[in-house]
Image (cartoon, rainbow, N blue to C red; front, side, top):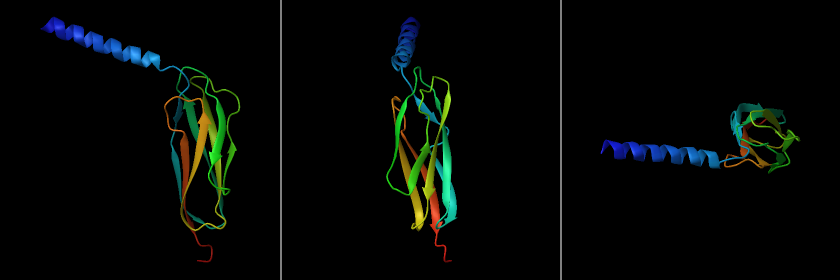
Length: 131
C-alpha cells in the first residue's frame, strides 16, 4: 500500500512539473492593478504609472493600450520587447474636467502575455469645484 501511494505521489508531482513546463511564453505580472486617488477637485489632471514584470519565459511585446474615454490617456508604454525578468511601466493620465462623482477609468493592455489580467484602473472621486 505504501509503495502504491509513493508511486501515485511521484506521478502527480511529475504531472505538475510537466504542466508548468508546458506554459511557456511571456507573462505580464502587475505590481498593482488599480490606483485609488481618493477625492480630487473637478478640473484636476492626475496620472499614475503602473509597474509590471515579465515573469514569463519569452519576450513580452505590448502592442497597444486602449482607454474607453477621451478624458483618459495612455501617456506611454514600452515599445521594445521586455525580456523575461525585466520590468516595465505604463502611465495613464486622467483629466477630470466635466466629470463629477466616482470615476473608474480602465485601460486595456494588448500584448502577447499568456493568461493574465490585461487591464489596469484609475479610481477617483471628483468633487464639484464650486463647493
